[in-house]
Amino acid sequence: MNVAIDTHPYRERFVERLEANGDITSKRVREAFLAVPRHLFFKYYYRRQQNGWEYCPREETDSWYETIYSDEGLISLLDDDGHILSCGSQPAVMAWMLEALDVRPGQRVLEIGTGTGYNAALLAYLTGDPRLVTTIDIEAQTIAAAASAIGQAVGPGMTVVVGDGREGYAANAPYDRIIVTGGYPTVPLAWKEQLAQNGILACVIEPGLMSGAVTGGVLRAVKEGSRLSGHVVRRATFMLLHAGGIAQQSRRYPRLENMLLTIPARSSESPLFDPSALSSPDFMFLLYYDLPDFYWYVRREGSGMAKVYALRSHPEAALVIAPDGEQMELRGDERQARIFWNHLLRAYSFWLHLGRPGITDYKFEMPGEEGFLSITMPTGTVWPFAP
Image (spheres, rainbow, N blue to C red):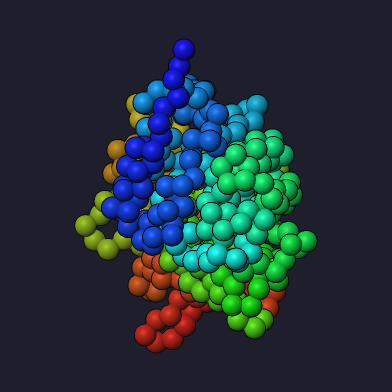
């Protein structure tokens, strides 16, 4: 017979690590993480393996609780094809966003992206009353389990609903705070409209909604009058918000036999395009916003794996980085290849001209129905992605 493990030592070590890394900086957020048991929100999780996913049910073992109380995002829901539908976010990012949100007792909060319900319970602790928190998620499969765990952790009264979080939840608006635990390329108008005056929005903006972007940034914005403005304060990535299920992207892989251009990938001279930029989150942030249909994959060439970069809008051309990383080749249909190469060069040149801006160099403003990212330089302000 298994004996229930006392989780307080795990929680204390968990919080100490988050504090040591600078993710928890305030007494109130520290108390919330100590008070709300994360293990209540996981009856199981999935761990990625070489040949698929491993199902890890709850166990009264040291290793189980060490995993639950680690700084690790945990996959909590997959579809029949093994695509991720929901997960428990990385605690460090959660803590950092809660610090940025600065929730005060008595404030009304909207959380978009319920997931396991753990973050909603932390919000309930910070507001002092679960009835002040509304949380919404598109995945109906997660809501019942999340609502049960939330009630067990912080008591009844929270509004837990199924819906498209991109539309917010007008019934309980206005909100003093809105937190979004899923990535999205911009701020939907509904979030701005449902935020109270002087209210704070914390969300992760991630470019390339349809392109598999791997990085984004935490946006902290404040509503003053009819304007929402703020800046990107930290790198972060979340599962992308979606309309339910995972829509499969049509991806016609380029025919790569026709080689048009070969360029050393490790030239000592200043190259037109440095392929190492494709490994830079800062450049990729700009590139995915500039070319939202950009994507990449790997394919076997000879005895190694080559990286292939392409555009969905021009599927018969690609840039291929050789397995040894020594050269890159532009291949495919000549006309489409020229267009793709020019797009890539322009984005790279623009990034260099701006001084290689990082994700946290971007400011955000939403004076009307649309939001814009900008970069302030010594010579003026640039809106890189404005129409």
